[in-house]
Amino acid sequence: MRKSLPAALLLSTLLAGQEAILAPGQPPLTEKLVWEYTMAMGNILDVRIDPADIDFFRESLKANWAAKQSLRLQLIEGKRQIDNLPSGERAAGLARIRPAVLATLERGAQAGDREAAYLLAKLPKTATAAAPSPDDAKLDALLKPRNQNDARLDTDGILENTNQSTHPPRTKPSSDAFANLLNEMNTQRSYLTEGDLRKMIRYFEWSLEVPLVNSERNDLRRRLIALHDRNGGQDAVFLFLRQGIGVKIGEIDMSYLDDPFHDDKRRALQKERIPQLRRQAEEGHDLARWLFARYQAAHPALTPGPQALTPHVARIYAEHVVFALNEVVGQPVFAPSHDLTKALLKRLLAGWTKLSDTRRQQILDLPFDWANTKSGWPTRPEHEKTEMRLAWGREFSAAFPQIQPMHDARVAELAKAKAKLEAERQKQSAAEAARLAKLTPEQRAQEFINNQMMAAQLAMMGFQQRMQMQQQTIDMMRSAQLQSHVTNMNIAENIGGGNATWRIVYR
Image 1 (tube, rainbow, N blue to C red):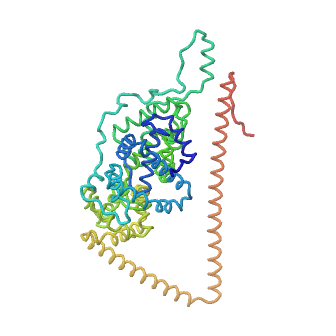
Image 2 (image 1 turned 180 degrees about the horizontal axis):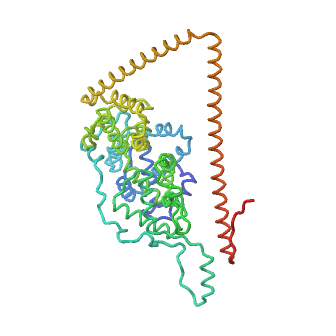
Image 3 (image 1 turned 90 degrees about the vertical axis):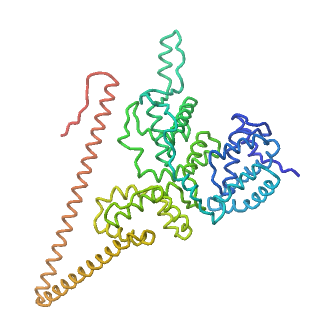
């Protein structure tokens, strides 16, 4: 007996029919359904989906949508039900349906189904718990940077203050000048300049660490202009990218008050935005689909599980290792290179499952932490530097035997310094004990009182310093509030007309 399609799925697919129809059916095939089906198969089979995969499934679904749409829609609905489960239960839900889907694909591949064979060919990359390491050619392709200048930028020669989109657009004026003036005053318009577009594109690349090439930048620029023309950019995905513009009052850039490109914000942004972008893409938002596909292509998972290693992390890890090795040696002997990065990535892949969850997370957090660690290195106390050099020596001596002599020398020097310090401490303790033994009871009591009085004086000085700092902070806040009040009242006076001004009089 044929299973009927749930009403919620029918409604959603009918609503999705407002998009361009790719193939007839009940419901017809739309771009949203292409995306949902492709992402559902990727999640169920635990394989990475690239933009090329979406293109393949679009053509495959168009070719036989009417014949197989019932099975495909049931699979999409099953994936939606799993997405509605609590986050801790979704992995178990996917694991329950994965064997049945794999069996269906294997039967289809044996019968000559091109789509099933395509999916099964992707399985070895990420689906198994012990996925084989990529070969040298695959690693070379993953680590090789793309050609940024694959096309000429559409923005070349355009000034940043050039307006590229106005919403709602201005209508042709009528013969009634007064009516035209009223209409213009009552219309709230949104403007998108060339400078805004550049910042939005840069913000996407920076916040999610997705380096685009020029052709992709041109494509994203056109999409942003079209979306702003359509609705003024009043949707969540556009507003997310608009954060890169920063604070603006009219056409005055106030980003210096709150820099949107501050590195400390990037980790929180990624934790918040990547799941949102995935969900918006699965819901059929065209711009979200485009952005999320580029994110997945830039961060392919090289290891299974939620703590997945990516080529981007491998590059940062290689930079971290080179810096650590040079610090252990004491001079810039090592330099980042493609071969070194590939060798380190192979080493990580071989031992990834043996690392603790804490160590894996430390490596995955390097893109967030390493830049701050490196920039703050010159001002770090020398004893902390020594401790980190010793830790790096212990960690990397096995993989880089040439640093072992320098590491051993540092360990021996530190042991010698500790022994000398301990001998001096014991000598001072013995001298102090001898001094105290010579004191009379009255002298000991007087020394105790003197020590207590000195401690009380130090505590009082610390309290007075804190009170002075608090008073300075209060005075600064009061001054800022007064200046803000004066500015606001002058603005109000200028709007109302007249020659009066405002000032604060202390009495």
